[in-house]
Amino acid sequence: MYLYILKCSDNSYYTGVTGDIEKRINEHNIGIDPKSYTFNRKPVKCVFVQQFNDPLDAIKSEKRIKGWSRPKKEALILGDYNELIKLSNQKNNMKNKSD
Image (cartoon, rainbow, N blue to C red; front, top):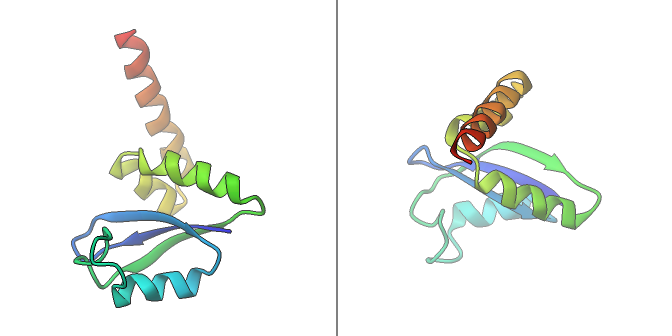
């Protein structure tokens, strides 16, 4: 199972999971479902892929990443794990201050 992030033509990001990454990206670019997020944001470009052995882990990661801020997604895409940790810590610190 693959977790993927697409960069859309409007510069937004879309996160999804699939068993066939090439087929799924092609489907996004063809525009199979007019109700889908990417339908009016074509073309899309795959900017991140991570493979998972357990489909449930891929789905959990997808849901988690969908809730992330744009800077945090970009740190993941760039492989900047120090920035990713920093952004995560900032969010946690802000949450703790409001408790």
